[in-house]
Image 1 (cartoon, rainbow, N blue to C red):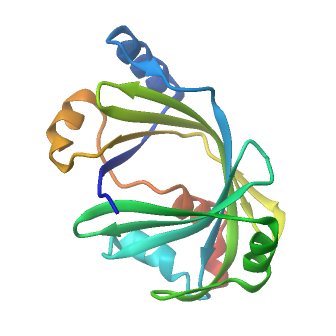
Image 2: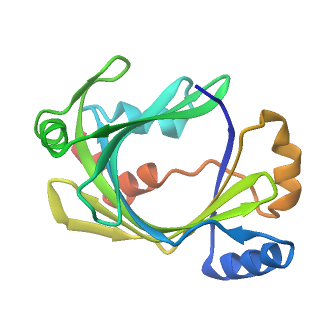
Image 3: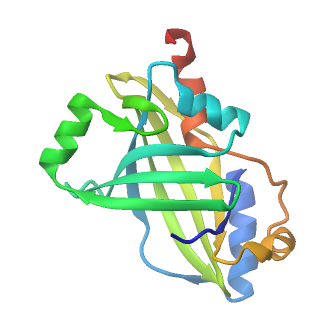
Length: 199
């Protein structure tokens, strides 16, 4: 288990263009080709995962099944925020385990029985700048899991910068000249799909 700095910042398409140009001129390198990411997020009947995220409570977590480039390979992920920092666990699962979790849900030690609620998909670009890992997400789309006609497309891009060193906060603040604020695709998806009305 390793903790890390992880800042996630919503930006406009224009901001993305300017920042990409500036960092590329400073030596930022693309790590590998863009990938399409799709994640199924789980929550309980009271939307406690959503509520904890909104309130910034610690410890909290996000639970999701993720796949890349629309290939039938899945990983079950727990993204955990604690007083020590943030970390993620990821477990590869086969199609049978995927189907089982989708159908029956997952019994979590903190949140109890959670079931699939929304699907979020987007395109992710990957970069390295010095010791920092930078990703930029675009074309973010959200669907209610049980009703794909309930749909929302975000006009935001999301910049994420990660460092394994918890002391790099000041360096990151100087590198990325945007206001830092907590942002979650999951909470934005819940709100824009109007799913709070069903709790």
